[in-house]
Amino acid sequence: SAVISQKPSRDICQRGTSLTIQCQVDSQVTMMFWYRQQPGQSLTLIATANQGSEATYESGFVIDKFPISRPNLTFSTLTVSNMSPEDSSIYLCSAETGSTDTQYFGPGTRLTVL
Amino acid sequence: DQQVKQNSPSLSVQEGRISILNCDYTNSMFDYFLWYKKYPAEGPTFLISISSIKDKNEDGRFTVFLNKSAKHLSLHIVPSQPGDSAVYFCAASDGRMGNEKLTFGTGTRLTIIP
Image 1: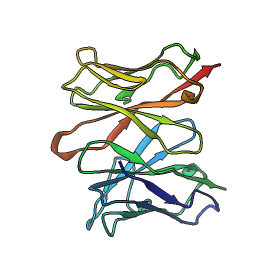
Image 2: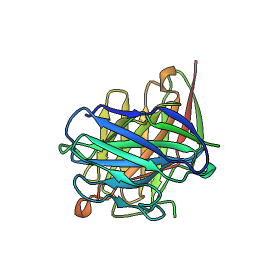
Image 3: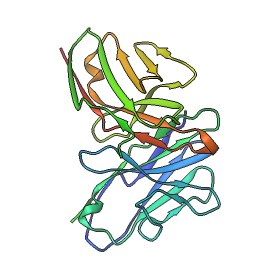
C-alpha cells in the first residue's frame, strides 16, 4: 500500500481566488489521480496526473480551471482556479502502485468558498 | 449516467449480526471491483477487492461476492462491530488499455447498533 498526505487539510477561501493542494506519497507510484466529492455526493474523478506530461482530464473538467502538476513519482498538486461557491467540496488525491490495481487515498482537503 | 449504483443510501444492523451492502453496475467492461470505507473528515480506506475472474474474495470479517451475469456485487461483514459504522463505497474499473480510473457508487451509510 501507499501512505498519502495532503496539504492543506482544509481552507476557507474567497470567491475569485485560487488554491493549490499538495499531495505527497511515501513511495514512488505509477499512477496518481485527483477526485472531488461534493456535499452529499460520490467521488468524481477530475483527472489523472501524469508524470512528466500534461494531466488527462475527465469530461466536465478543464485544465484552465484545475491545473495539475506532477513533477516526479511521489508528488502532485491540484490548483482550483478562480473559485466560486460551487467549488466547495472535498478534494482527494489517490495513488496506485505498480503491483496492484488498487488506489489508496489521501485524507482529503475540505474547501469552502465564500 | 450512473454506471455504479448503490441503491440503499443507509443501513442499520445490530452489533454481532451480518451486514450486507449491495452494488450494481451497468458497464460490462468493468473487470475489477473495490470496496472502500469512509469516515467523516477522512479519505476513503481500501477494504477489499475482487477481479472479474473470481466470484468471491474473503479477508477476515469481510467477504465480497461478484455475480457477473447479474452485474451485481455485495460486501458481507460478519460479525458487525460498532467501528464498522461508516459510509461504504463500491468502485469499479475498466482495465482495458491501462484505464485504471475508478467509477464510484453513491455510497451506503452503515450504522451498527450496539
